[in-house]
Image 1 (tube, helix red, strand yellow):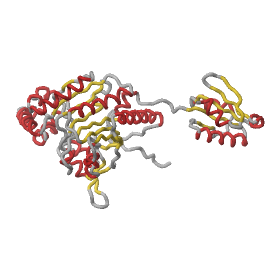
Image 2 (cartoon, one colour):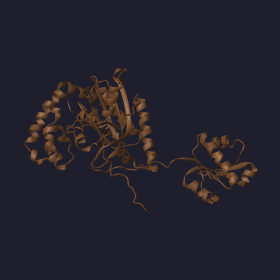
Image 3 (cartoon, rainbow, N blue to C red):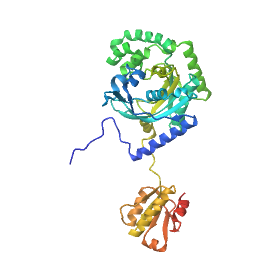
Image 4 (cartoon, rainbow, N blue to C red):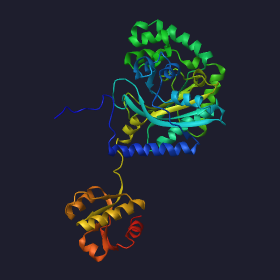
Length: 418
């Protein structure tokens, strides 16, 4: 026997009993997006590496350590997408969507790729669902984006969530905060991890995002960006919170919240769960008013977010319902089996979910299979029934049964089952 080939580390098979829950999450999200006039967009799984280096930021851990990058046969550097926003921004620019009546609301879903240490809820191939709003700088768009994410989680029955909000300011006021941070870190630089010591020079805000316990403890005394916000950024945040207050949405201001991507300006937020342990962020995002222009498009304010499907699956219990089965068709004898196959095909076309026996086994074995599959109804067709021109339909939940003529059986059975 040849050696078994296993799936790559950091990836996961999504088996049938889990797929039901994934489909429910995706379908629920699509309905909620539709209610706020948000259209789906689908972008390639790989893009030019330059897009992520320019958009996400070369000093981020994602670009410097975690991307799956390779040279293709045309000697071009391409990267499997580590997140969804940059690709949507590229599509927005390349397809001149900025010329359409705005604002443009887009959503996406699909796999992302990052080379990092696999752990619960975080794989090297993971799936995200996200939303982007282009063409408005209004804090009302920030509020709507946050509320749409919460609407999805509420529709799925998720409880115990907390919204955390911060502002990273604009380029004008962020410069003052950067100086204050550098001064703070320089006094205790040697106490931080080696990664953070490098970040102090390259991007000091990233130090606040470090997950190393010792660094998190040191950051408790770091200066707050709330103290250096300019009047415009203060007003933006004030209006955002007022919109959330108007609909009764609770939140907590977290001045240490920075997110892990360089493109954010002003609003950043996370939806965190007490059910996820140390990796407690379920959804995160914020405003990125300069990214479209930095990627070659016209100045276009924007805000967006994404959530990890794997983490949501963990909260919801991991597995969905058993695939519903309306009818199981059991048959005995070659002629009856062919007629049963014909009926099953017709009943599926009528809209029922139908399973048939493939083993040719005894009737009691087929009945046990119908019960194991949690079928609502059982249709039995043997040679005796075939000779009488009828089939037997059993309601397995009510334990009742009756004969149905074969002439017009598809319409009659479909009516009874539905």
